[in-house]
Length: 247
Image (cartoon, rainbow, N blue to C red; front, side, top):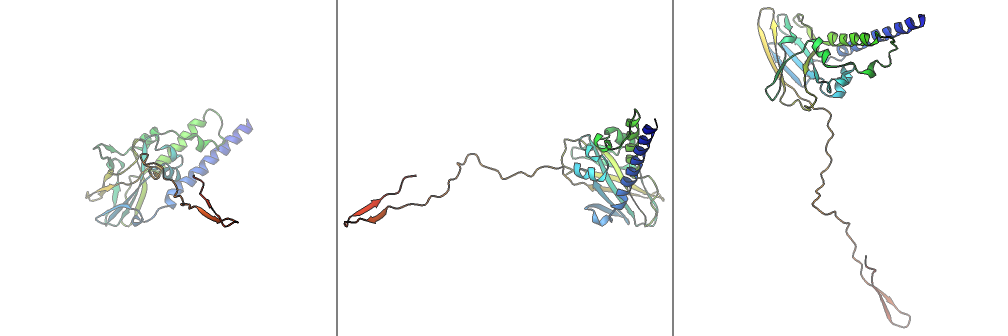
């Protein structure tokens, strides 16, 4: 009994430490808006987007993010810098993903985003949590990751900034973000609205094609050196002509 409780406590501490480390990753990697290629500025407010589109990028930015692509979830990191004279707010419900085929999706709540994916087993395999409650514990803690990393609906003071994720459904079969846009509204305390629309870019890991081979053309053969007959003087004054051996 004591051994079981000890192992459970170690597991819980492992989860807590991992949560603290992962939660600080986003804050520690923040760069100025100007460092992001997908950005827009309106009325002193600057916004940058960074889609976690590829499996590699999602896995490096979010614990267990390798599962997002195959399970139809697209998190987009949003960075907002308020250079205006008023506080502004960003509401998740005001974010929309517009695709080239005309389909528009509203950003998911953290609960709906979590429901699209399942905790990858590999991420939790090293944690020594035993017993029937293990699944519930890891689900609850992974759900907290979605909540803690989401863009918060809170005032952003003048000269302040905010960063967080908005989540959208996005099919695994689509490998390119070309033609896809994110539209959203930021509201000032006076009621003024700033409407942003930022095109996305990005492709999932596709192998570069190798050089094409034209099957209709015969394979080339190496150039052959032309050989000439060899003249050899005989002992008795005669001449011996040696012809080359045919290839």
